[in-house]
Length: 141
Image (cartoon, rainbow, N blue to C red; front, side):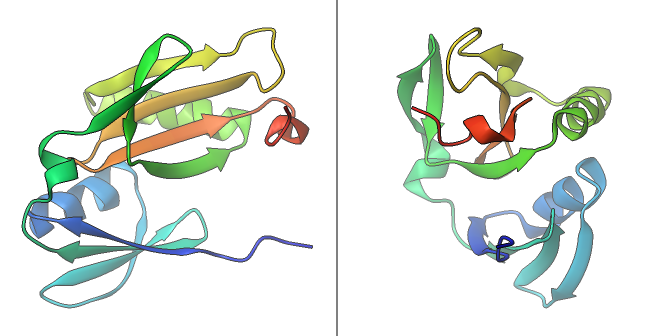
């Protein structure tokens, strides 16, 4: 059974900056839009940025410790193929992206070993991008 696309709508307090970030930095294809929102093709899923006043989570993200790093909560992202993840990390670095957690491999040598990176969009929304060399480890305990 294939995956069904998800739909995620997030608040952004600076629509033009967020539109540039998702469109230019990530290179996401833009879909429908209005003066208050923009649809993006987020790796086959529908990501919608909606103009909205800054939220408390965007002001000061809560964090939880994971593998010695402070992971921002809430966050969203996508699980990529290993090569796609490496290419995205390189692309983000080429744009001078400031990472919350620099690209690295966590849980090395353990069940669930994965490449991960965390960053914030211009409006403070936290994103995580990860990859597994063995996708069978995605839900492994």
